[in-house]
Amino acid sequence: MSFSAAKEMAPYLAEPKAMPVGTPGKTGYLRLGFELDDRGRSIMRDLERRAPLIVQQELYFDEGMPEMPCVYILSSGGPNVDGDRYEQHFTVRRGAYAHLSTGAATKLAEMRYNYSGLRQRFELEEDAYLEFLPEPTIPCRHTRFIADTTIRIDPTATLFYAEIYMSGRKYFDRGERFAYDVLSVTARAERPDGQQLFREKFVVRPEIYAPTSLGAMNGYDVFANVIVLTPPDAAERIYARTEAFIDADRRLAAGITHLPNGCGLLYKVLGDETGPVKRLVRQFCSTVREEVKQRPLPEEFPWR
Image (cartoon, rainbow, N blue to C red; front, side, top):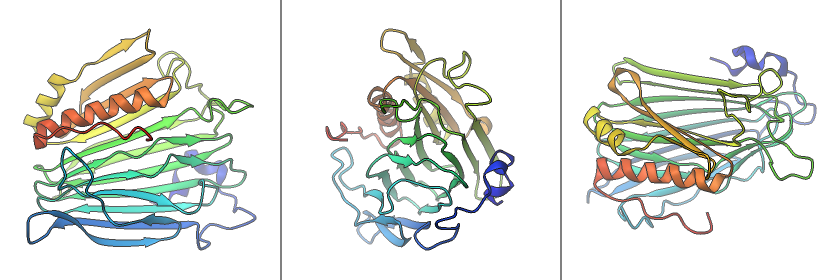
């Protein structure tokens, strides 16, 4: 389905006057494929990209799983602007494993005519394992952003998928807490045979309904949404080890629930700053890795 068919984007379909939709450099594409080599080590076998998206050679620096390829997704185009369209396709084949992240936060610049869209597809085969932990997304004043993520996953595979959204440039001199126009995020998952597992969508339009309201973010500035798709026995162990809480002193809150059809878990975190929220997400990822791979997640690099 075209992004333009989403009713929340209907007010933002004007063509950008400087560089229209589809202009080279505004339609980034990335396809990565991971598989086991002849020695049983996971490698990045497939790489196809189109500017401004960039991926360099996979690295093996994870002390908890030194045999796991770690890949950073970069962009040469600066912040996302109106009319940008990005598509990412990740495949993890039978028994392979990988860790994906981004080199920096995704910045969504002020938009006057159109919107920025991201389409993602994840495919995990039997016994595959993937950690997807990008840096936070920062929407500036009058940002319009829509993301659609589709997941096809085997019942024996595990996907840790995290996304973190900030309220804006909180410490900008003019202040930009929830000053964007619309943020639309959809995720859905299915089995290889087409069985539908779940669909989640949230649309944030601050001018219509303030995210700071009670029952929404209630004064918090950072929101993390984490999807864990894994076999039921691992999901139960992860659920038992994960605390749901509201800590008024630390200004942090976290909750966890089961996804339908026994496919996994949904974990959400609220906070005032990105650092504490990122740490909770990494702690949760470490729990997932320990229960699925019996390996710990090492501490994050101090400069991240």
